[in-house]
Amino acid sequence: MYHATITERKAMKNKRVIDTDELRPEYDFDYSKTVRGKYYKRLLKEGANVVVLEPDVAKFFRDSASVNDALRSLLEVARTTQRLTTRSGGYSTRASRRST
Image (cartoon, rainbow, N blue to C red; front, side, top):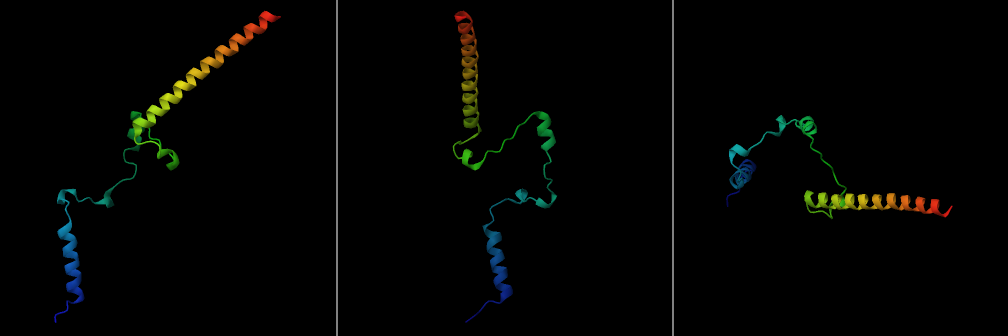
């Protein structure tokens, strides 16, 4: 019975990994040459805003569009409430003037 040597087993194991690699050679990327935050200043200058949601909040939104819709709704409620408060304050002031 033939038993493969340690070197032969390693070679066979490495060959299987290489054979199952489906990426094309042009997609090999050398991560040692990457620069952290390379485009950070450009994004700030162009006006891009990135907001990180806490995980408990993020689980309720499937994408950025749903977050934007929810925030727009909240802003509309805030505007409506502010108008009601302003008008209510104005009416109560006038009412108090009439009664004196």
